[in-house]
Image 1: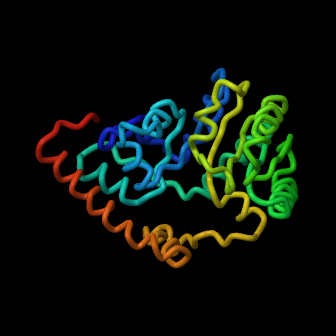
Image 2 (image 1 turned 90 degrees about the vertical axis):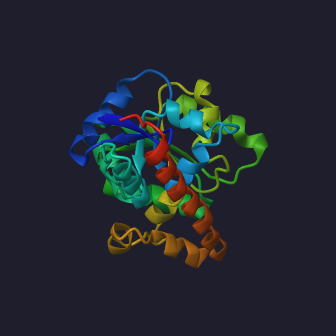
Length: 247
């Protein structure tokens, strides 16, 4: 695996055939670990020096790009071009790896019925993967200590963080000293997809890089993301013309 920097933001070049090996290497590390699915919007957010998402990425153990524009940007700047991952397919591959090695899972997020259904479906699909706990999302701040303690005591190999966790990727990062040796992965739609409540983006749409239109359909205000996207293109051009980029 190789880590590049695109506009100052770390991105990992990890081939699918090497993902299982990388996951096992991460699990062997001490302390809290983190996998991040990186969108183009995340990349732009990480450039804001006043916020700590950039530091979160620098400390992440694996950063997998999910936006086609990230690959195009790397190619434009003549960097090693990373592999683009479909988030749900990557989750399945990761869970297959954990099941193969008899590891454990904790589910965090979503409403009660959705979470229960997701747990049932995951258990039916991954027979040798131990689900050692679950906790709903949208919990009040007063319940947070109980959530953290539950995860600490269960000490799962992987915690999937999903909808209803306001801080998203930063939730685990801000509390990394409160866990033992778990690996965290935030994917908002994951539990909903496992429960059959959320329909995943089709492979055809994802491969074409048109998944943003599905998001706009659910939230029309996202059409204004065209402006940060244009800014991304300007940054790429400026970097190619005037700056030396790390390879």
